[in-house]
Length: 231
Length: 231
DNA sequence: CACAAAGATTGACCAAGATCAATCTAGCCT
DNA sequence: AGGCTAGATTGATCTTGGTCAATCTTTGTG
Image (cartoon, rainbow over all chains, first blue to last red):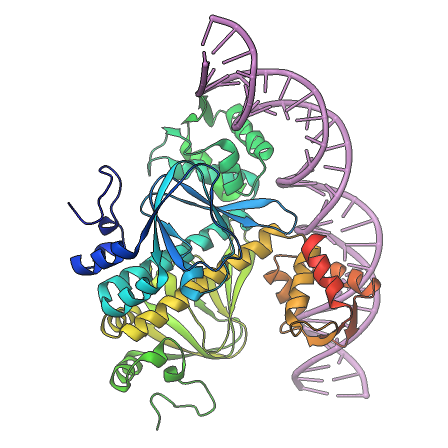
């Protein structure tokens, strides 16, 4: 049996960075102390303000990280898919989590005590390096999110989102949204209504053609790109 | 002479985390290859979209990180003071910087080739650990920033900012702003006008009393806190 | 000390999105 | 297949904060 591979077809820890940099003995130790979790849609995996003692790695499924606000409404700041992890920063710093995490659908994950992660950093330089890159990437991604949410107009945000789904350099493409329209709207820090309005304007202008529920045909991507940049 | 201490009274690299975790020989090597920089107010230290090959550590002074937008306007996302560093994420990931960095006043810094940082991570676990914490903190801080900027109303943002300047638990306090009102407004993602209006409303409501240019007397902090939470 | 220049305040107006409410549509379930 | 329900769309209206412009104030500086 390959290390930790219980469910064939599902990701194994030893394939997921930064854990793929650990040697066999080390990873076995980690897996021995890790707790496998399963969550159904809507289950809360981490409450905001909790100080998590574990890092949570998603093996399969999808987890949404939501930033609560005093006024009750919550904003989606991150979607965590297989191979990705969350609660890292809070766990490493031993500070309260800012976001809550909730399963967006049936999800299986691995809960890894942060103590073991600290140890792994001490003992395996390659792991430390990979972890560094992961954290740097998280920070970078946050910055992208800020840019998206506070700098751009609604039109720009939607245009940018669509463009980024198309293969690089293409002029037209058939794409599918990778979530509900409401979810995407939330990611872009827009209400579903506004998102819908912007989309339908694009359709009216002939930049986009609806293709069923989640699909759309992007026509004239360069023009979309222009809309993302200046409008 | 202590390692790298050229200007007495100014921070030395060996006192700054994560570099304080390096042994003497290692830190000397770093200092030998680091380039000391001096910048006056307004000088650009890093252009957005450049891929920095160095990590920049501020020894003295202040650097502002600004996120450019297609529409020309730039938003302040971070203030870097002595002992802090910037361009880390982009340099580590070898990706283009998202923000530009500009000296807010006379500043002296140290430019450290990211290659050496990678080496240090490989060879000194304690350094790797400290670097991890630093990156995690950066990510955490970004999240706080997002929360502040997209979740809260202008009133909430200002109230929160003021409260956080007061000593914990006090009911009234004499505080001083640590930057221009315009700069603070920018940090809170507000225009100077809006910031001013909110402040003057607080004054009108008797929550705050102006005390000269940058000082203010906070009265009834619990009420301010309430304003931050619910208004 | 006076004056220049940057910063701060105040007012009038505007625009982008949010909100509320009313349909409409597409999956999806026995 | 036929309805049921969550999701999506559309319209009317409102609120918030931004913009533009005028004035006031503080702070350096010659």
